[in-house]
Image: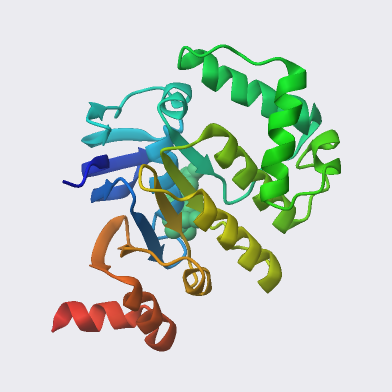
Length: 254
Ligand code: ADP
Ligand code: MG
């Protein structure tokens, strides 16, 4: 039987008294890749942030279940410790914070929360070096400050490095493809495919179809005005590429 990782039921969420999410239903099982597509402003990033527990958003109806636990009002850090990882659409630069130290703190706080021993800097250095090799990241990215002066592609790679380090159960990747040239896009897609296995899940958020040429989702959901208005399979993306988002309205009206 397919095991559920995430179940979202009738989710409504507000920011600054504006209702952005207006009744989202979404179910993701272990081993699945789901994509959420939709026009700019349809609420994709809001959904990502609400799942991750961004404190600015207020949930006023519905719930979010992770591994059969209700996390609707759980704090952000706890959701992360329970296996939710959110890669930002716009990763922030953190001047003055060394990337290696940042990654070690991240890794150790996750271990501590899950009742594992924290590991010492030397062992961490060995671990992180094997991780960066698998994603072809040059070692000098460890000694630089977090994302400072990184190119768009390098910032996204640093997000993927965090995803691999945390062994995320549910990785939500918000426009991981934005601002990437074709080589960087292929490389990121390849790394995501490598990290994917039967016990984790990926939620890809993307505006464009091109990422889905390299990562094949099991389901594609189309968002519009804070709702999922259509769910299809990998073929849906090709139709959207050809006919635009109007295609969904045409199909829905048949
Ligand atoms: P998408 O990621 O699909 O482009 P977003 O989730 O970023 O869409 O935005 C959905 C809607 O929520 C937009 O209309 C946007 O203007 C609005 N929104 C996002 N953040 C805020 C905010 N901090 N305050 C008010 N409205 C916001
Ligand atoms: Mg967005």
